[in-house]
Length: 500
Image (cartoon, rainbow, N blue to C red; front, top):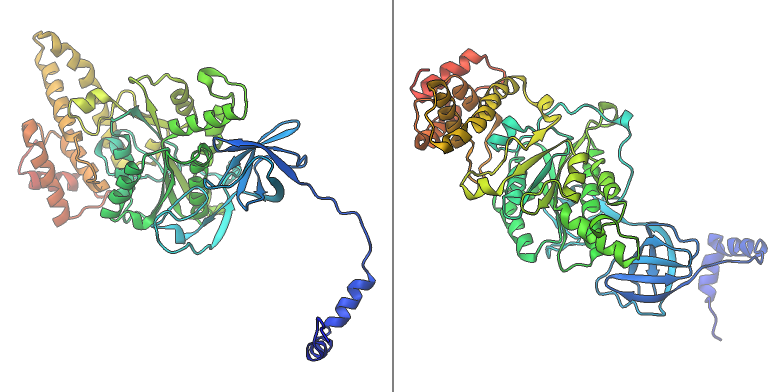
């Protein structure tokens, strides 16, 4: 006779008390009304779907489609939901059933992400084994409250002479990199990531709407210089749906926040937020949101503000970690007063402006010092470095003003010619090859040498050789930043074989 339970299994169940528990559940069972919601896809296309029904759905809730794919609620209307499709190969069609999950979008975090390339959902893109999920957190979360924050008082060295001296960045700062296409923005960001080798800073490089060739170039550069070991690359490619490009920077920020919450220092590169703004505009227009200036939705400022406000330095009572953000934004024909650039300038703590004219003139990195500023980074500089940099910056700004007069061929007085000569020398010093980060001790050394006139006798063509002499001297006889200035000066005179 067929039976669900064999005699042997019944005896085992009886011994374990299973039958008693089943009987107890039957005795206490009561008929009751169970309510559930099911929605139906009204239309689908361009990476979004319109869903009828599900009146209790919440913003940013994850919905499950009939084919097993997922979507995120992006637009709440009176009778319909606008949903971002999260799976590019989704088989969602008109009439498909949709159900609640009650969940929000999360991404895995932890050291398992180091050296990996993932999409905004945390799925590997590098043909390596699946990630071991240590912990997950929501892509979007509130920025740390004021009481949890502390002052930015530790430097983040980029290894670039002009930035570390004149436009310094502190750990926990938001510093914008701005410039035209082809002016070296990505190169400067990569230099900064490479410079974190040995600095105990974990990095996240977010690529938004970039071509596959650009993504491959960035990954290869990081790998060749040993930077991929402490970096996570989050990719929302140009071929991805606009929803994935929209989510990419929030995913990268969530990964970095996981390390910051453990008391570690992190750096996030957003390359770039111009493309992110365009992806958000595309989604908003598809969702029938009213357009504003340049067809961007009215909340475009809030979009980037809530992202960049998550960059901060936490107080010791909250772990003491930091999240430094270097967002990149592209300008057209040097127009820094355009809509998206001005929004980001007002949100961040300063900007590094890369001038295409300087790039064409061979001044690399093409940093326009008068239009660049770091509002809080100076407080994070070492006191000795800050003192030397303040003297040097005044000389350089005076040179930029006086150099205009040389175009007219007028004869200048001796004092003015001397300032112009020293300014041109300084401009040669600022030139630097890509992916050659320099230590903080070298930055202080060459500034002292310049301020004391040890390099004045050198021709511009001899500047690279003089700087190499300083680097070689520091390798033979290292000096700490806190060493006495007289000791620095004596060493520099010996290395350069010169006197002021």
